[in-house]
Length: 193
Image (tube, rainbow, N blue to C red; front, side, top):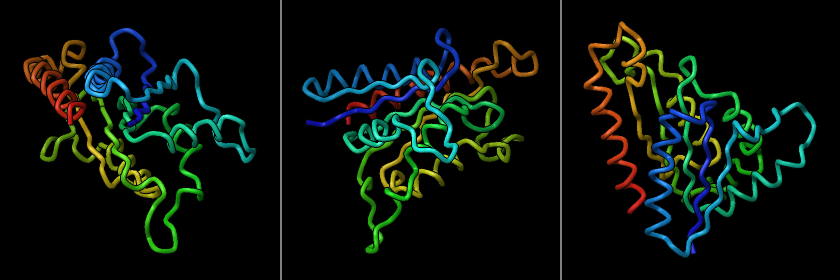
């Protein structure tokens, strides 16, 4: 039996693009894996304590969820060019020396499939004016690689989500619609695989 760990971190309940897309992934995954296990964690509704030098009771639960998961689905909206602090707190609790590389270079968590769904108000693709402002994907790639969760890692980006709200982005509204549709198409393909 395979297990999906579904994590959302958006502060928005209604209108969250990452929640919409991760939900689509989870729905397809669960229909393809009807006997599969499913764990959902909403980091905004139930925040994880920040690492403060003391061991938190929740850490054992979080680590157990990660260990049990075959697929980890992370909804990571871009806030101020990075990730929500709630997601950072989750990462800090699980990215512990317990999961650092073994002496032979392998990782306990190696082989797990990780899908990160992002939503970005603008565009951060290579060649765009704000490409260098993307501290979201590079950070997540780096920190997940530290514990072996980068070996089967996919990013799905929905960009220009602020095109309807920000007058400077209005000219990109059609591209925003295309980006959202493409993100939905990709997560459905990934969830079916």
